[in-house]
Length: 376
Image 1: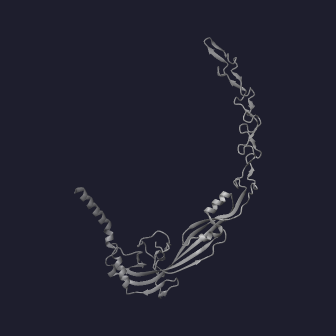
Image 2: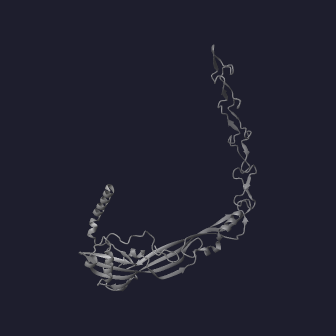
Image 3: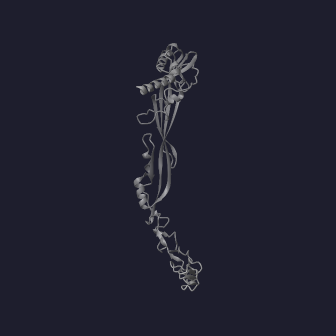
């Protein structure tokens, strides 16, 4: 892909193909008149004597896949030269997103340092065709009372509203269920069985008197007990506001005022379109050729409306692509051969007889080299 001095591509982006392509290209009947066609390409004329055609066939015959006798035995039916044209239209688009935001004082100061002024945002558009994002914010706006705290710097605590919250241990009941479940705990001496085994045989446990359980000391046999965390009240001091029922306002960062300003960004992107016009040359190859720039026009446009999208610059470059088409016949078969901007384009060509034996020759040479290495 070639480029102009400003670094913009002059051909449509995509993978570059080889100079020779497989498959027969469709042949277009030659125009009976020379001159500029309705697409804008310029026909230099026809050459049935084949001077240029012979030269191109001779260059083609240098390829081992093409018969050596092609330039001598081919019949040149027609040679047509023309100047095809290609236009590259490059457009610089501006897409703006904008919103009105509230900033705390420190946030607003940082935004003004990092972003360009809203009123000057379009002055930072790229001067050439490069992609870019410009972030902006309104500068020098006056502060106003914070709408959440009304300038008071604090707001009602979102966790409690009155400085107290339900005790997390008892869920606000003030009473907790005991782990014993039924007001008793098993005797540790007899493991709750009520008897022990001595040398004389089973006997009542002396520790629990044979009951196997004791009254639970935690709940005093009630299976529930007063919550020690809240002393049975069910409520505790709010850990967020520490009982004050108010917290610092996050919106203004406890400053009591905010800055309301327009903020957003402008994204500058590039769109490119390539069109080509030719009478006898393959359009897709004309589009890929570099050619010679014959004209260039650039137009600038007003920036889009606030929050909109539009083209702010458009450049149209016109290129002249010289080309030659050779129609020839060899051994009863018709072929086309092109030269486009100095590059040979061969949709199809006669096959040399050596091509048929090339695989066998390659195998033979490989075997001989292997034998030489093996027995040398």
